[in-house]
Image (cartoon, rainbow, N blue to C red; front, top):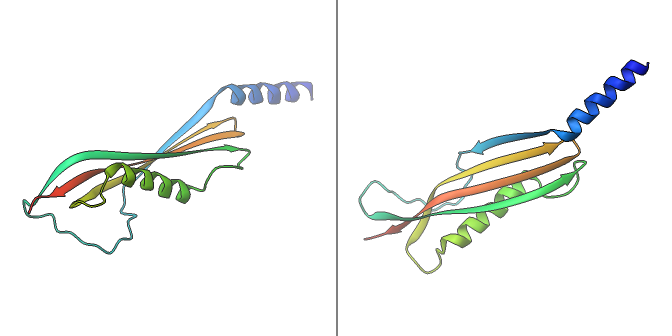
Length: 123
């Protein structure tokens, strides 16, 4: 019994000082906009790359936003950084990346990054 208790304590210490990080990417179109733009002609130019981030902390699986909320928050920040209002610009090739870092199963840090390219129409 004493050996089992020592083994449990050793495993708990190892997990307590180590961390695990998972990275994922969501490269599908999560846009539900109904506007379609054809980019097959030479009527645009790429003017910038923009990004937005959102993060949340979880302690014992409580806190922060769900993943969908983080994606929406990151996308909103990216669109704000794109400065699209009042111009003939659009964001294309949106990509979402998710990073989850967990410490001993007690604390987790989740970060979602949304990035894309701003194009400006020339004609």
